[in-house]
Image (cartoon, rainbow, N blue to C red; front, side, top):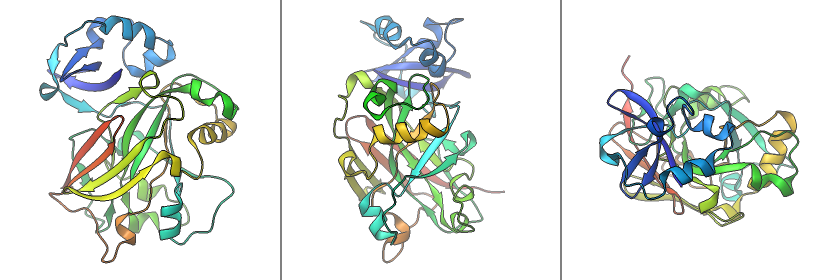
Length: 284
């Protein structure tokens, strides 16, 4: 299944993509499941799949306004420097453990929604990544069991304000400007993607491909990241783990390449879909 969150006629809802149409699961499950997180907490993905069998959809995709795939994630855990191509281009030594930082909900932007270039920055950089959505709660999850805790996958753009990222050794300010992280258009559920299947990740700016990598190139695999993160904090349904960006970021190009007002950035996971965000200067 492809599950998404959206607004239609002023009402927030969630649904499933069927071709070029959306089944409104908020209507089908009114009073039962309010959103994707509620479905995951109830362990009800099979129930949702049965509900959409044979459905033709309620609206065209063109008639909805996308929301971030999970608009209300309990946690957004981000992994830094998780591809050797990126580690090499930024000149970091290998690390025995993942670099972990956090994003906040307000930093996220939906598919087709502008990612905002703040007036404080001239170095708004793209970082195409694979997001993993957690499907059930767990603590100290063994790496061998981690696939069972995955609900699905989605494209993510960990948009970075480089000046603020470098203010201190802590990256959180540069990763949390308002609406700088794209998340969408939908999540493809684990049932559609084989465990340990190679995922192909690409990033394009104004149609020019700037990043191209596969999940096989991660330094720390998805199961390892789930094991590691669940050791220090319990994982919950709806948590998002953003697994790191490959080489090719703008700050390490020569000349440097940053996103500007009017640009269009795309993050594609071939097996999932394409996240598109225009870049818009934030006026204050």
